[in-house]
Length: 261
Image 1 (cartoon, rainbow, N blue to C red):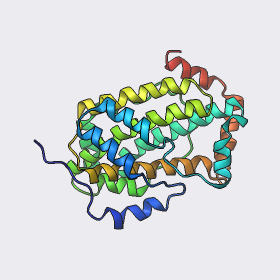
Image 2 (image 1 turned 120 degrees about the vertical axis):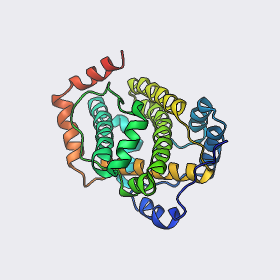
Image 3 (image 1 turned 180 degrees about the vertical axis):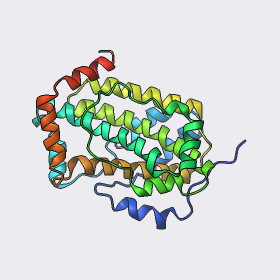
Image 4 (image 1 turned 90 degrees about the vertical axis):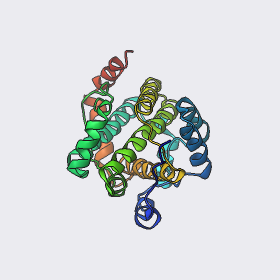
């Protein structure tokens, strides 16, 4: 049996304070960590997905003030803006993933991950091109992945990438209902399939601590996405979404077509 890979010893001192500083950051609960880790450690990946749906907060963020009021009442927004906001946010994260490999990871780590995990290259090709706000993965996220050896980077990236699809599957199901966008539930099924595909290719043995750190780092990324989309001083993001909702109404039709609807 392989020795489980462990987390970063100085995580609490070096990375966690920087993650906590991200607006809307929410610290994962012990139940979320323990129950999801038990399913992962048992290599029961459908159970991992079902467990996350059952016990985990789907938004992975703590919202307050005006952003919380906006998020609690999404159906007050026109459906066209809800649609464009979903697509533009997702495009921003996908574009940031490419920046991660091209600019943020060490070249040797980027090459190793791309070479070992070729199945991650083609993601969400049903998302049509269009507006995407500028976004980069938080530095603490990058340091977590790439702060050790190249082999450690491969292991941490794979756990985070697979766990991200588990999280996003749950969030997309929540989003589809909360924002009354049923097509997003079909998108969520794509994320579930991707999670199972990633884990079926490679699920490195992990300690609970590495699993915990991976969840926390992902929650930092999710908080950063919410900050990009909901901070009231980011006037450019809602304004651009309104513009695209008015003049690029064909994006949702392309999205539906990509989903086979």
